[in-house]
Image (cartoon, rainbow, N blue to C red):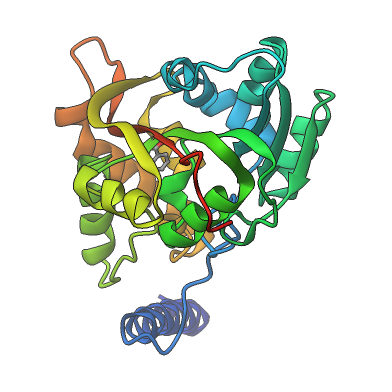
Length: 299
Ligand code: BEZ
């Protein structure tokens, strides 16, 4: 080996070593909470959790609105009702409400998603569900697959209460206790093997807990149930992770993410992929319906 070859080898080694030290140091700072991981803005919640791209969502997550139909059935929307779609996403269910003859407003904290909803000719506003400013306007508030992104459920319920007319309904579905537990375990274990402590961005309450929160705000719970619903993933686990797991991915350097996703996907294959190669997510839904009493005096 010539001197220049040895020198080049030493320089490459030093570069690798310094990159490794920086990466470990970054991990330690994040673990010690002296440095917050870089996480992107979320839908509805302004907690920095997730970044939404309408085209990626349409390609990888169309099943989310398709599977919202039972919750829509529970809402039983009537023609002429004025309905708030809390976390309207790209507006597919909002449009269904309009087609059923309702007058609908969608809100979402993602400007891109609101733009997608508006592009369907619907009324939508960028708004944080924790600081809604509606007052006794709606016959019903509906929400599908959104409330698990918000870590302050009481603020949302208080805003819903204010938004409803007396006798109005709050009906929705979101991830309940145990939702995507296998996926969370695999993500956390893959981060832990890199000495990174994961911060779970999702709120998956037990039914008793959510019932108590609704009742604490004087809503009358008509139904509330935890529903295990293994959900086919038409585009596979990789696409699901790329679409929904950004809060976990964003603590990693961008070029490390594809390998991380492969590792998590491989770990999940024995439990969430069947013999035909079809993938499922271990969804558990919390579906509920509650009513604001007609005699309410508190707003
Ligand atoms: C859900 O709909 O249950 C869900 C979606 C994305 C991340 C976590 C949960």
